[in-house]
Length: 240
Image 1: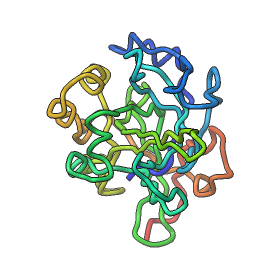
Image 2: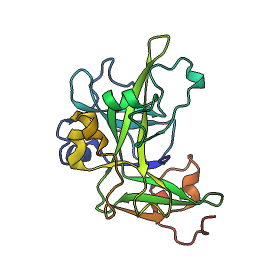
Image 3: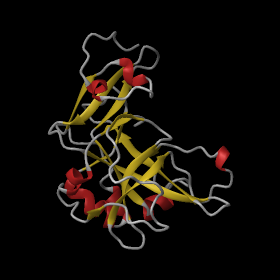
C-alpha cells in the first residue's frame, strides 16, 4: 500500500532525469487540471484526497506534462460522486481486468514523482512508521493511473491512483505491499508502450534500489509537515 509520501523534487530535477526529455509544465486548456501552480511547494506529509502533482501524457499534444490531480480515483462513469469509493491504490496483479482500473491502465497511465513514501509496520497500535527512498537519493517515479469525471455543471474532476505490487525483500518485514517504482529508462515504455510492455514494468523494485528507516510518529497526523518528519528515530517502541 502507499498512503502517504514526501515530495520536494523540482520540475527541473525531474526534467533532467534520463528519458524524461519531453517533460513540460501544464499547457492549459480543457485537458489540463485546474489550478496547477508554477511549482508546487515542497511537502513532507502528502495524504489521500489532497491534490498531488502527476506526470501524464496530454491527450491533445502528446507531451508529458504536470498537473495537480486529486489522490483517490473517481472513474468517468461514476454516477454519484458522494458515494464514490475513490481508491488511492490499484493492485498491479488485477489492474488490467478490474472494472475500476482497466480502461485507465489501457489509456491513461501516469507517474507520481515522490522523494520518499511512508509505511506503517504492525497489525495493531502502536504501529511503527517507516520512510522509504531510493538509495541513490534520486526521486521515486511511481506508476499510476488517472481518470476524469465530468460534473453536471461541466467541470472536470481529474484524479489518480497509485499502483502497488508485492513488497521486495527490503519492504517485506514492514509491509506486504509497495508502490511500483519505475526506472528512469522505463518512462517511455510506461507512457508509450502497449499494455503488455507496460504491465511488465509493474514489479517489485530491485532489492538494492531502496532503503528504509524508522521515523517519528509525527507523520501519523496529516497536519504535521516539514523535513523533520523524515529524520531517523531509533528509540520508538516496537510495532505490535
